[in-house]
Amino acid sequence: MLSNPLHSPVGSPIHTVAALQHNAGNQATGGIWRVSGPGGDAVLKHLTPDGDGFEHWEASADPRHWNFWQREYLAYMSGFAASYGRESGIGTPALLAAGERPDGSRELWLEAVDGVHGRHWTVPMLADFAHRLGVVQALHRDSPEQAWHSRRFLRQYAGRRDYPGIPWDQAAAAAHWPRDTREGLRLIWERRDDLFAVAESLPQTICHLDVWPMNLVQREGRPVLLDWSFTGRGAIGEDVANLIADTFFDGLQPVDRLAETEALVTDAYLAGLAETGYFEREATRKAIAATGAAKYCWLAPAMLTRLAAGRPIASADYDAAGDAAVLQRRRPIFDMLVRWSRTALDL
Image (tube, rainbow, N blue to C red; front, side, top):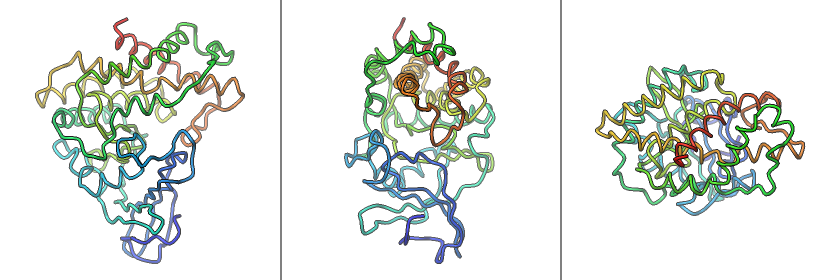
């Protein structure tokens, strides 16, 4: 754990420490731990401008950058995270303490939320959350941006990588992905700028921008949304697109639930929007399609490039499956993204 924590709300000495699963490659995160002390339990998140991690997860000092290292700290300190979902019962961990360290990094001490983790949610639970999110995001259409909100997140996040000479017919992938799938994935990659433009042209709201099961807990029948590191302006439907796809990419849920999840989550989100007076169903469906395809435009090229180099393709932090299992599991998700891209591009 972070040595010599300075702002502990649970007292001293710390009795137990458990590292929590997270993206260890993000340079903005020095670590996340659940700790207990004389005053109870808390989650400590260390936010840093220069942590260890991957080059493509570099932390930024630019408040509009997709990976601005202080964003979550400001989301909690300003009260934004606590108030975001209040109208529909979407909660967030309570802020217990926070402060600066001598090296300029930050400690963020949050309530330890116990309940049903998102990776164990049923499809109706995901749909209930999507309905609540629709209510909230209809209300946030006219909300002002904060100075630290990310801007054009999708273009920055998904467009930051390049893969020259992508081996689209790589043998291991071709054994699991038919030609139509691979051609569709090539279309997504080659027209990613068009997908970004479509997403930016559609109705916007204030989004969380990292909605997936690892950031969800159900407590006493109500959802709690974690990790506000990326939040900012995005298309209506962008968070739902991410939730549908990222529930399955890393094997958090069985992929045979994909079709049901797509249908029920989309309908529930549309119902939530309508409940708050927003009835642009076709624009929302197009936004879900455009943002979902664009968000993962890089994933198939990355997988094919790694396979050609003899490197594993599973997520190092969340997925322990072998290459063949990952290729097979991700095919229906990629087929969905291909279908979404054709909807977004009017093909």
